[in-house]
Length: 196
Image (cartoon, rainbow, N blue to C red):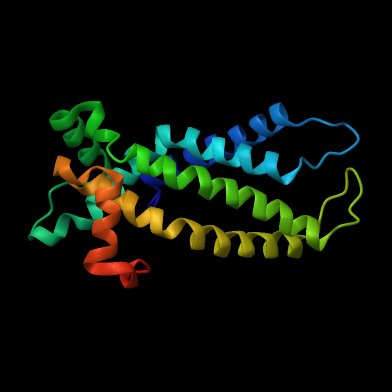
């Protein structure tokens, strides 16, 4: 089907891994037959764990996405597509190359998905405080929960996202360190461009 490529399939795989990990970790951290809603600190911890776990799949995807986005800046295309980029990075840098930026990505994903899942749950609970066991909230509550979650999550995660993207694209070993990359992100071109 046109428009459905390997990246789309990978995105769905990451979402499935993230959500199933979140559910399983939440069940391990909290189970009470009388109170189905886990405390928000447990929801946060389960979300953070799911964020880290998904990096096994997401880090190479982000690396490829970043490389494909910047490949035309030098005048020509370096890669024919997602799979070509994966193959060429692996051939030249090995598994380490595919996971360049993994630490910074985990630093983004852990708090990002901790915030994501806990804000979503908190918003739904605030809008439907009297929901009984086995009842589900109306669709508008889920929509407001999703919108609130998106705004709060990206506000928290955006600075780390900029650093993570820069780390995955940098070739100089001196700049691979997070503090050096953070300093570079702040000093040039500066915080004003974080939203670009």
